[in-house]
Every structure is written in structure tokens, then in C-alpha cells.
Image (tube, rainbow, N blue to C red; front, side, top):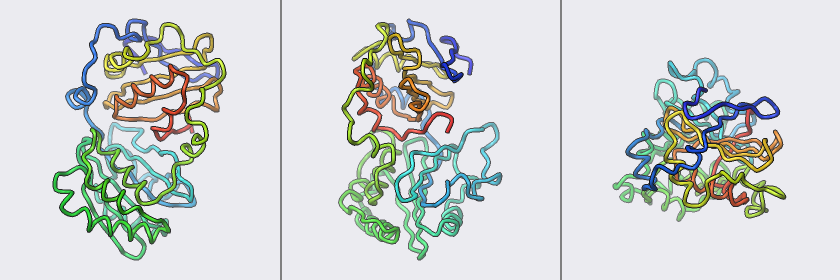
Length: 318
């Protein structure tokens, strides 16, 4: 990737890292603004699908996601896996949407391929979301998220979703389901989808469980950000100052393989990546939320790790 704001460096293991100039790092020329408003005014939201299914093999290895499910023209990275959950539960993110846009057919074929209940969430510009579910018994449901009319049918649909969860061997929290169905997103509707998934009784992702015992511990002994890194209130304007295809890198003092970086991708999503010295501690994720990115950077500069629990992480080059 060519970064007009900086240069490209490589870690000891040869992985590219994008560095920016000190002026961009500090972000001194841009005043703090409302993050949600900035995202809505200048950045396109997410368009695509989230597929939740239980399978003994990785979803990407299913024939359904072979060549017939290739990306749209001009896109080469439309399929990405979120952190798995115990019991074989997996969530696949499909940027630009499933081919042929026939979610009902995809539900039927996925249920047939996995023998398990399946859920598909279709997101439009991070403003609207239609979630559909199908179980092997034929039990089905469909519900919109983040609509003013959602409260009119929330109770009935929450019961149908609870039946779907029961067939999956889960115990749904009906009150939490109703909350997810009747809450307005703030501001990204994808968050409501994952709230709905949690309310169905699915266990926390593997990454969340691994970190649950030490959420507020130090990143590592002696963690110390470089003195040039922005901190506290300076981080919000630093993030909002990133141009499309630009990046912001914060490094540890005297530790070249310890850093956190944010890349504002050409599609308007943020790619957040951190490395804690070892190649085995190198992870990345994507988000539409500048607010979450700022919170992560604040946590990193403070030497905390609790901020990691707010994302679905993937190992680098997994």
C-alpha cells in the first residue's frame, strides 16, 4: 500500500508496517469534533452480510464458499472470519454481500451443509440491518434492527428467535433479545447484530475468554509508549485527521516490534492492528467506529489490555 502521509517499514519478521510523519501522529491542526457525526458525514458505512453458523470445519472450507462465492469485480478481500466461539460457532463477514443477494437460498444451503441453525445479517450502510434465521426443523424468522417500527413486533419475533436458539441447544435471554430488537444503534447497526447473537445464548468468542481473567492488566512488563505518541484528548483529532488510505502508528519506546496502528482503508473502514513484540502476539481487526479506535489507542498508551475485548480479533496472516 502506498501511504501519501508516510513511509513503509518492516518488522523483524518481514511484515510491512506503515509509518506516518510526526505531524500526522500528533494531529495538532484538527480540532476535536463529534466522532459519530464525522463518520456519518464523510465515510461510507458497511455494506454486506454476516453469516453465523455452527460447523466442525471452517466455514471458508465449505464448498458453498468456493469459487462460486467469489468477490465482486474489483474486490479481492470480501471474506473475513471473526473470532470463533466455542462449540464450532463461526461468524463470517462478507463485504459487498453474498453473491446473487438471495439470503433465503443461502440460509437453506448453509443449514443443509452444516445440519445446524444459521443466521444471516444483511447490513446496508451501517444504518439498516435485516437479520434472518433458519433451523433444520424449518423454523424461520426475519427481523429488522434499528427501525422505529421495531418495537411494534419485538415481542413476537423475540419468541421466534428463542425457539431458533433452543433448537441450536442454546438458552436465549428473552429480555436481552427484546432489548436488541428495540434499541437504536449508536451509531452502527452492526453492534446490534452482535448484541442479538449474544442474547441468543452463544458463548463468548475464544479471544474474549482468553482475556477475561486479566482485562485490566498491563500489556507487558515495562510497556512504555514512545514520547512522541499523542495521548488522552490528543488522540481523537489524531484519528479524525487520517485521510483515506492513510495511517497512524503509535510505537513503544525502544521496542521496534511493539506498536499499534490504524489504517483508514479506501472503503472508509478502520483497520486496527497491534503487535506486542512477538509474532505470535500480532492481531488485526476492522471497525467502522472511530470512537472505538480512539478508545483502543487510549488504552494502549496507558499500558492496559481491556480495550482488546471490544473487538473481534484475527491473528495476522492467519
